[in-house]
Amino acid sequence: MKDFILKRVVVIILPFLCVYGFYVILHGHVSPGGSFAGGIILGLSIIAYSTIFGIEKGKAKIPEKVLVWTESYGTLWYGLMGMVGIVKGFPFLANKLAGIDVGVPGALSSGGLISLIGIGVGIRVASTMVTLFFTMMEEEP
Amino acid sequence: MNFIAADYEIMVLLLILVVASLAMYFIKDLMHAVIVFGAYSLMMALVWLLMNTPDLAITEAAAGICTTVLMMVVVFRTSRKEE
Amino acid sequence: MKIKNLLVLLVVLLATYGILIAVAELPPYGMPDNPVHNQVSERYINDALEETGVLNMVTSIVLDYRAYDTMFETIVLFTAALAVVITLKSWKKEGDGR
Image (cartoon, rainbow over all chains, first blue to last red; front, side, top):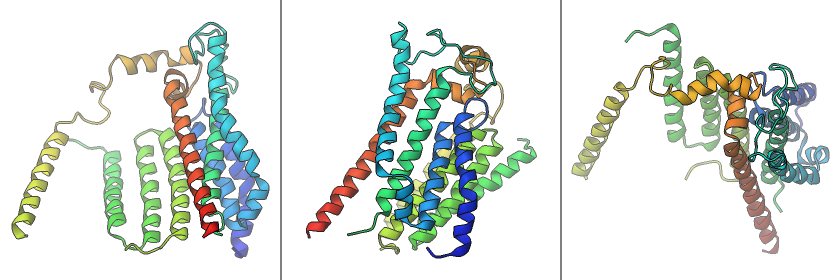
């Protein structure tokens, strides 16, 4: 696309979109939002960039290897966090039951495993959205 | 039945939802139908917000925009008019 | 043809009548003595803060009490993305050979 105004607007708005996505993911346990919504906002920032500047520049920012890596290991991260309970001798995905410190309610580090799981799910959802968009937008042979 | 002001706001938004979903069925141009779907998801987010569920409102607004973009890509890749 | 249309109209009107009767019997929205407010939601509202240490109750339910559901939801999303990638990429390779 060769529109000057759209390019400037996306360049100005892109860092704020990324920071807002990470904010919604990281503050999912103290304010409204959550990992799914934050991940979709984070993916939308990449989608907006590669819609305006072309699919090649978007792929240069986010290589395919990074997408494959985050998508697979983000799913595995959830299972690994659940294994913490089993290692300590408690059921799968046990949080406070397994003796993990949940901290002061309202602090960013509260919640024990919840915030760690949220980061993994958020990055994973973002990479899924970007993968779907890149796969559909690729130039036809 | 006694209603408060928020009930009437929700009723107006639900009426727009019904009109938008009927319009999506009757519009023949698929790109216009996708744009109407964007308006539908915005109205749905406002309904969630008025029902005191900001979590669902944020998720609905973000997911509605994302699915609209993906559907627009599919419409660009395939034929635009409905047969 | 005309009789069939009339029959369809009759069935639709009957179904609409039944649905409207069912909707009229619903309890009012947000009342504290609705049947959905049973001991499960009481447990969540009263004990979620001290059992998980999380202010947002929705997150505490999604990622702690119902963590299995969220795990398989992410696996479903992973499988959907995998299916889309596999289908479109193999379709494009077939198109090369034509």
